[in-house]
Each structure stands twice: as C-alpha cells, then as structure tokens.
Image 1 (cartoon, one colour):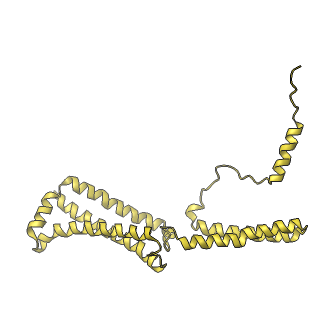
Image 2 (cartoon, one colour; image 1 turned 90 degrees about the vertical axis):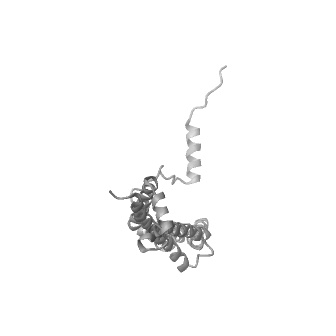
Image 3 (cartoon, one colour; image 1 turned 45 degrees about the vertical axis):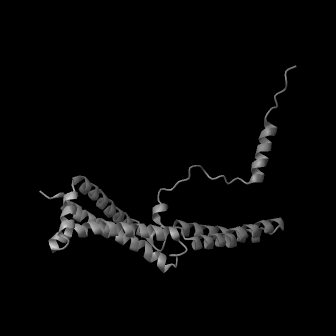
Amino acid sequence: MIESWVVGLVCNTVIMVAYLLISVAIIVPLWRSHQLRSNPLGAATAAIFLSCAVHHGAHSVHMLMPELGYDLAAGYAMRTAWGWPLAISDIFGALVGVWYWSLRRTYSSLMQGAQLFEDLRRREQQALELNDTVLQGMVVAKMALDLDDPAKANRALETSIESASRIITDLLGSEHFTVGMTRSAPADVIAPAAATAATAATTEGTPTERPPT
C-alpha cells in the first residue's frame, strides 16, 4: 500500500510545478508589456503563486531529504506528520493545478499578452479610438443632416459603423465570446423623435374618458 507521505510528496511536487509555471505565465507577459510596476494586481498575483510554489516545494524537499541522506530528523518527522487528511488535500490541490493548465490550453487565445489583468493603456487607447472614429463620425453625420447634405451624412455613418464593428471585434477578441451570444432584449432602434411622434399619435387616437355628469 502506498504511504500517505509518498502521495503528499508527489502531489506537492505537482502543485509546486503548476504554481511556478502560473507565476511565470503571469510575470513574463507583464514584463514584456512593461506593466510590472503599472499593474500591481498582476504582480501581486504572480507573487502569491510564486510563494505558494516555494511553500509546497519545501514540503516535497523535506520529505525527500532522508532518501538523500540529509536532514534525517526533520525529514522523517515530516513524513510521520503527513497523514491521509493532508495527503487528500494535496490530491485536491494537484488536480486543481492540472485542471487550470488544461483550461489554459483551451483558452490559449485569451492568454496572449497580459490579458488576465486589466491593461489600462489599452483601455485608454480604445476609448480614444472610439471618440476619434465613432463619436466624431456621428457628429459629422448630424451636422451634414442639419446642412441638408445626406450624401456626406451617409458616408460619415458608414465610416462610423465600420469603425465600431472593428473595435467591437477587437474587444471580443476570441471565438469563445462570439458563439451563442444573444441579447437579453431586442435592440431599440427607433429614433427618439419617431418614438415621441408615435406616442403622440397613439394618445390622440385614444378616446378621452369624460367625467360623469
């Protein structure tokens, strides 16, 4: 029968490797995008996984030392203390680490760059692009309609629609978000003036209740 400390040794090693790779997978994109200082949430998360990897690795090393002839007292004490409750919790932790990496492979397109954490510079760039292309195009279209120039208004609207479509596609960025996505309610595309006119027409066509005499 396999002893509990052997299970703990193997599972702690798996956890150490999984957590160490997670910390590297977070740090490297942040470093490449120069966000180690500007993205403290990402850096702190990487530090947490790194510290956990060192912690679990230390357990494995202590339990392995007697086989190498070093630190016999501490190593055997660690083996004795590592009963089945601890071994079972290590099994769970190892399975979680393996599950994470299986999901990461499935969603690899989402893990390019530092996308696990908010990229503030990218959000600022996207906001500026929305203002420069979509919002200004709508303003030009409105001014063209006010000046009775429908051709220019149509060109501005077409440019704004194309830009908005491109930006939205870039924001979604993956087929995982484009499959099976539906609106909770249909879009309200009626113009405010048309909606007001329709409401007024409905009100005028409804008989007014006369007070009893």
